[in-house]
Length: 101
Image (cartoon, rainbow, N blue to C red; front, top):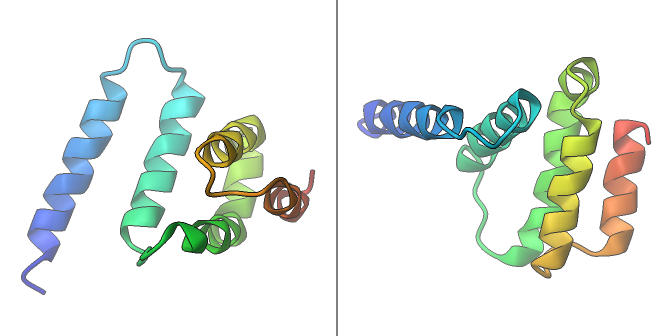
């Protein structure tokens, strides 16, 4: 579609900006890039969609998240979503159990 080149450019720019962070670990950068790529390719209309998208993300990237040692990064991201009021503690437990925690 006509939007693809712009989407590619936006993704590359987003990744570049994340890589420029100096106070963020490599694992944090890796997780942020994975999450951003995933969430930008999925329609999120309202905050209530976020728990389902988190579950989809874990299903899609479970092996990669485990292999790259990103379990803590997932948990911290879920805590941030809880702090923002878009994720319940029950949904965090479900997501972490899907990840094998």
